[in-house]
Image (cartoon, rainbow, N blue to C red; front, side, top):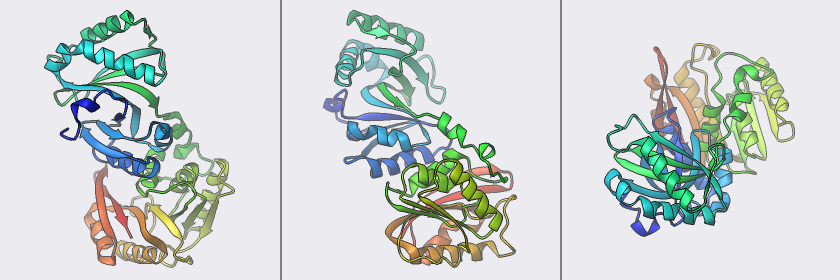
Length: 358
């Protein structure tokens, strides 16, 4: 919080993201990756529990919202104070809120109060806080409409009270439409659409770039790359049934013109050094087959082959069972490890998601 100067509070230049609690580390990493790609002056200022503060050109916020999967809402930061200062400075906070409503063209709002991670009610009483804010806003003739898409969001987190004006929300219904069992071709084992989107986002894929998933299975990750605007999505699988099925899924969601499903071995990729980003989930679980090959051999061969086709500075995102230390295999073949995330799947499998760079 030391980077956040008092004069910047309520200026309309700092934004907050209410992060999903689905995973402890992926939401902030995904937001950071998308911000790097979509915002001209993106800077991650601070991370609190389930809330991140950042800078971005306001005109580009919608591009961020269209991409992220593990963020719930984005808005402009109005105030961040400890509970004592919050109660003392409420009138000044409301004035700052009014300033931001005028700046962003908001004339009616709803109000919500949320204790993140079960913060004690003794610090700030939510019901009383909402009543105080409503009373103050009414003095300025602000209409209170709890159905409004704009909302004054009050978060109590880590002993701090954050007030923000929510401008945009993520539409999770779109991800629901693409759940594996709702696709025309289904086999057990694919990633959830939101996790697939996070894989693509972590790869820093930009609109108009070329994307590859060499273990594409039913095509879930490739589908997300298509939907964020890749100019060419290559979706490969050694299994003919999977290759044909992924093509059916991609076509169903309107990706006929910019995607190619092919039958091919990820250890022998017939491509030149033209790939901008790679994100993939190689076979390692109960419902996937390695075709009799040793899993470490598959990983090493795939990663070595990927380095021959991935542009310098391009990102490669992949997952693997934690016990084989997939990040070490990637490091051994010459990839730079940017970060790693651990995800419990079931009692016999915890996956490591590796973010690496050529």
